[in-house]
Length: 477
Image: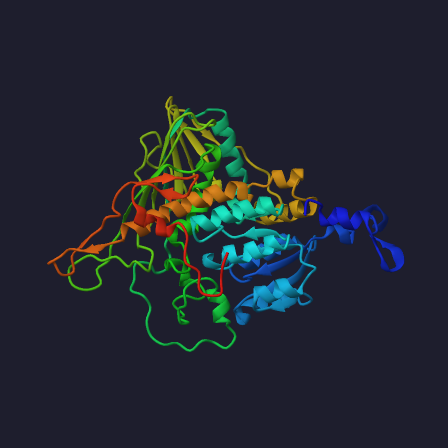
């Protein structure tokens, strides 16, 4: 698969009639040779999937040849827009039947990312996978290795990685403007969906236009419930990865990239509890918590010769305003609801979601802001469009190497995000206290030491159950 489709078609003749692909210059200005178009399929095509497909299509630069969604009603907008594309409800049928597919965008709930991406990569198809790239650490590592093995072009859907703001952050850190960074504070107002609530109950009739078995995929069997589909699945571990999974790959990306971070060495969590009945706070092990505080630690790197402590808070909690930043200046977004602060020996750098609005405040009182950037017509900073161009150029191409979130980068980033979730889930593990009804010990409330190379918690064996998941019968990675 190291040879690109464009190269193959451009240099080969079709046997029937010895017909050659016509070079672009023969067609004239404004026309594109068939060999310059990528045949794209989309899986999960409403919500974020709608923009992923449209942006990869890039106003006719490429072909949309197949579309798949378990919910036929929600699929209608793209089914109608790309009426010539094959329409499917089961991605396995799509991959089996349509041999023309070159590349696949995958914008399903988190629990299905790995199964679909692995099947596509094993067939030699390039993949664009929404963030986080997987549901658990083992899947992220497996997908990263598979992209190399099958020599496919990969990209994770954290579009801020391609933003000019993120590029500016990297330049400033490389220039040493804030010195060695030792602390990073990150926060988000997510969840904006229900979390920390009792497990949904009751019988609900499944709509006839939804294939619930395919929606479940490798997750353990659960009856259809509108509390899960189409949006609220994020708050349940069976399907989603919570507030950290939703925003971590957007917000952690800036410092992770700029500081050259890799696997963390330790993690610790504290989470918000809920009162369901009585006067004892409780945790819902099946669901993500209403709020969480995570601390991750990283060793010094070649780019940043200082160990780094990263503090994450969600549920509307955030760290306090640094003294270097004037009280009326925002930190992160304009309303301070999401953001990042990197604290270095010479000053602090703050930015909003997607790496936008970066600013530096130096110890000497100087303030540095990002130069004005001329706008372009590429949607979401060209994140999907550049992936499509790299697919056409091939695995070993310059275009592929210049992508901002290939699995070689997105894999370790996703593993870091999912490490926080491992700590959250370990926190809720409990054992009954003998003789004290409804009272428990929580042995997972401790600092967890991580061997990143071997994907293993070394000081609390029970936590390792969250490195990977058990797949439903009939499913495997």
